[in-house]
Length: 472
Image 1 (cartoon, one colour):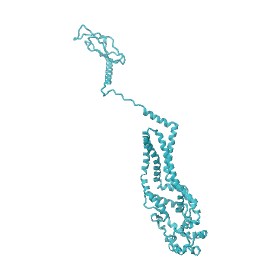
Image 2 (image 1 turned 90 degrees about the vertical axis):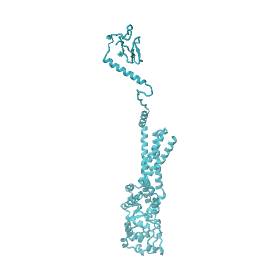
Image 3 (image 1 turned 90 degrees about the horizontal axis):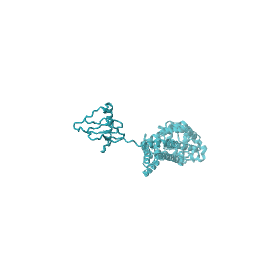
Image 4 (image 1 turned 135 degrees about the horizontal axis):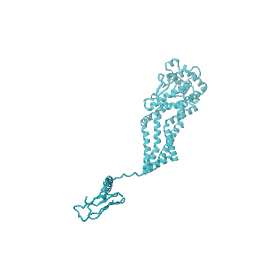
């Protein structure tokens, strides 16, 4: 039994932290309100807006592609705290609904019309600034590249270059590409400016499934989540059973401890403190693996905001991702804190002696023998109790008769019985016979000629009125 308790207790201590982490993940990952309130209450949008507005383009970012200029144009004009909050909260709602199975397709919110209008208004000014700051570092497009840009637009994945006419200042970029205000009104500006444009000016939602496989949002973000989405939905449906499993493991651990004659209170304290420490360590490892790696920094810098993500901005996003991970596993942490609190309360009660007195009192009550029921009638062939009760009952009845009809032995005239000899009268004592307490019944007046001798029972100092006198 001790071996069984060792196996069960060790298994429970190892598996309970894992079950708590899984339960917390399945509960909080799709809790949109939790994530939105965390960003809002942490002043995240104001800090993000300030960082984006103050960020400056760098040469290495310009050379990566035309998308850098586009993003910079949008950020400078649109990235107010309110606009960013609306952007983040709508994408949080869409992602959590997709993860929980409420929607079948993952949609990304992007206010396409606002983005198109902003780019059309500030594109020429932004290109002019880039020429001034990095003119010598920006390559000039060859004839084929210039024709491709004029006919199809800029490819966001190709190295950025400027046509000769634009770089020399003879034409603006919008003039070179024949972009007019009419294109903006007809929502054709982005289609002419960007090759394979994924933004739909007539819809603010982008279906991720329809994005090309080379798009980093689809290849990194969507494909990774889509692999685990089915498993997550399954965990969401069984999360109540996870808590039941934790309770069952705790009960089994305590039951086997009792069967192994161990101290129950000590095993409860050991279970609480070890599972709590194990849970906290597991959550800490998860947070460190997601929040303290180069991958997370690279993700924030290259996927979310390529070209404009300064070191301060990356640190801000990294810190928010760490808070996000903590929120996801916060339920497990709260359980661990609760276990440690219960452990502390039990230890305090033990030190004060309150819990020990309670345990001793219960133990004393359990060890107190119960009184055996008195049985006057036995069914095993022994009729001694029945006989003694019969004798006591007859004695009580005789006492009652003696008090109601007292017998005067001095007025009784003794006559000889007709059937007995006349020359042998029976001598009667004029004094009643007495017996001592607890004395065995005996025959009184055993003189010859007495037909019915008197039996005296154990009734001390009481005359026996049942004495039969010959001749009466």
